[in-house]
Image (cartoon, rainbow, N blue to C red; front, side):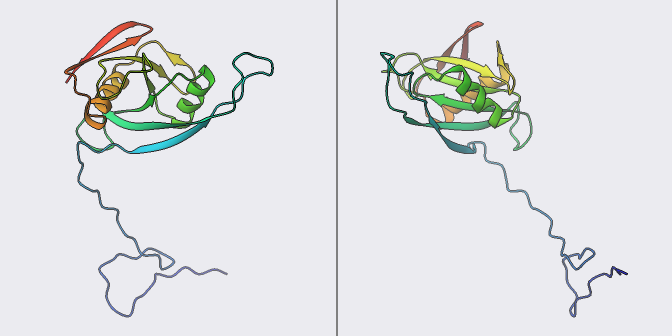
Length: 175
């Protein structure tokens, strides 16, 4: 027969104790900083092209900076979250979908340079695509705002207006 007892400490404690003698420690929230974005680095290994193809090349690794930003709020873990992935070069459709599925947020935005010579800090025009964990999405407002916030705040883009070229047309975001 198993008997449950409340844990008794020899000295009075200010920490409440649950059954089985496990102390209950409440989590404390840290103050929110507006410039804080959690980031992670993913390494994507491209599969080599088919044998005999003129574009045969060895598999390469590419580091992808991914930011998670909460739109429409100034408080952490509130608002509408979106993942923002900055692409140095294009990815295939499956890679976009796999990353969006891994992020498991309502939308993941993929910001890419339109020209190889473009820079995330100097350019004012970027390509933008949105993916849900299931499919590509034609338009997403909060992920667009999150993308602009990442470029302005984390990449220190010097322009006052950014233009995103999307499948739904051009979208502009002002600082």
